[in-house]
Length: 336
Image 1 (tube, rainbow, N blue to C red):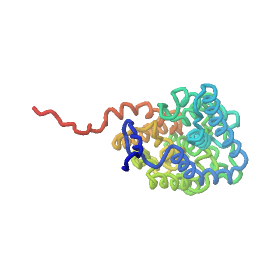
Image 2: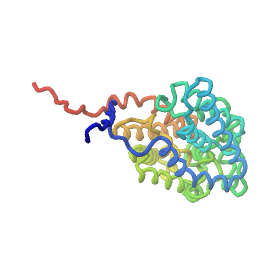
Image 3: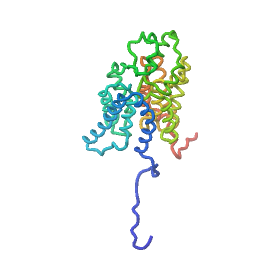
Image 4: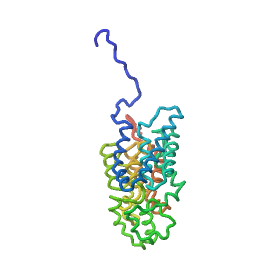
C-alpha cells in the first residue's frame, strides 16, 4: 500500500463467509422452468379453464404477499419468486375445472396463513401451497369432487359399474376406481397397466399437474441435476410408495404415476424450508411421506393423500432434524 492511501474497509459479519452464487430468485426461477413443460402441456390440452385456474391461484398468492408487505410497511419480497412458485404449485395440485374464486381463496390462505403469518419465507413450518390445497379440500370437498371428463379423456371409457357404489369421485378418479376394485377384492377386474400410457403422456383427469407424469419426472431430474433439490427426498418417497403398494398387492408403477405422488415428491416435499437439513433426515422424511401416502390411500377415506402426507411429515421435521443432527465440528466422545 502506498503512503497516504486509504485502507480498504474491513467487513465484519457472522458466518458463513462463503456465499453461493445462487439466490432465492435464481432457485425459484429454475423451479418454474422445471414445471413449465407440464404446465404448458396442460394448458394446451385443457384450454382456458387451466389458464383461469393459473391466473386465480398465482394472482391470489402474489397479491396477498404484496398487500401484506404493504400493510405491514415491510420491504416487498415479490421479486424472490416464492409467491409465484406457491401459486403455480397450488394450481397444479387442483383439478383444472376448479372455480376461479376457489383458486383465489387458496392462494390467499397459502400465503397469508401458511407463510406471512409465520414471518415470511424461511419461517413457515408447513408447505404453503399444500396448506392452500388442504384448506380447499376441507372447505369445499363437494366442489372439488365434481369432476367432469374432458373430451378425449380416457375416464369416459371406464365401465360405470366400477364406481357405482361410490357417492362421489374426487379429482383422483383413477385412484377412486382402483380403491373400488380393491374393496371388491378385484371383482371389477380392472387392469391398471392400461393406464400407464395416459398417466405418463396425456392424462386429462385428476389434478392439473397430473397431465403428464413423464414431464414431471423430467422436471424433477432437471432440478436434481442442477443440485437445486436433494435426490434423497423424491427417491425415498417414490421407492416407498412403490414398495408398499407392491406389499399391499397393488400395481407399484400405477400407484407412483397416479395421483399427486410425482408432483409432491419432486416439487413439494423438497421445499427447503419445510424439509430436514441433513442428508439422512431427508431420506427418512421422503420415506415417511411415501409410507403415510400409501397407508391413507389404501386404508383411509381419501384415495389421494399426497397433500396430507407431506403436511404431516412437515410437522415432524423439527424432530427429524433433532434425531439426525450432524456431529459438531471438533466434538469428541467422552471416554470412560
